Image (cartoon, rainbow, N blue to C red):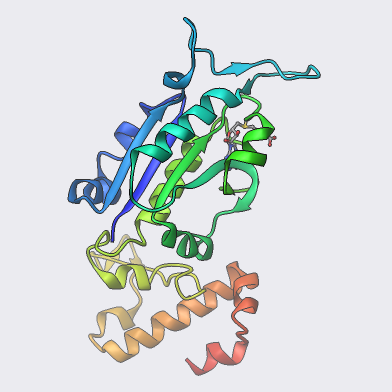
Length: 240
Ligand SMILES: C[S@@+](CC[C@H](N)C(=O)[O-])C[C@H]1O[C@@H](n2cnc3c(N)ncnc32)[C@H](O)[C@@H]1O
């Protein structure tokens, strides 16, 4: 399985460095992930390649115009045969991305991520041109590029073969509805700060039990919403 991302942005270069290295960079090299970044200005006519304009009704800021986005969607839809293009508008008003949404979305296999800028995107894009609207959290960023990078990173990690060790995905926070357990590495003691004895014991059953328990305890303390969602109680912690 491979997955294909097209991105539409006025800052195409911003993706270069981020995805030239690390997990996603290697997955692109291996052909597990395909990434095409399109410059919205290439779909705009006129000498100035204008992609934004003042808002109807007045008010501060500029709005990304519908025409270049519409033309880009037409072009990108026709350039790749693999599956239907799932068109996603990055917006703080969309559904908030989480691991569960990512796991469901991965089935789509081919995505177009539309990055807004300024005051946002002409509302008709949202109404008539996209299949989905994704937010990366309840805060406002300057553009959809960072949200798109987050989206690509989160989904890419779920593609089989992208992470070298299958277990590293299974153990991660949210994969089983819980937060991950704490991790330690050498040295076993540093400036009086010690690693828990159990991790040095060599007893794999005890280590597993300790990790599960830590996972439960920290989920209860830090994310009571997840703890309750999984119908867990203090009894689960004591018995593990
Ligand atoms: C400054 S924001 C526009 C915010 C818009 N006026 C609003 O209040 O809903 C510019 C662009 O950044 C992107 N953006 C900002 N925050 C985001 C978030 N939390 N999640 C996803 N995209 C976001 C969107 O593409 C948006 O069109």
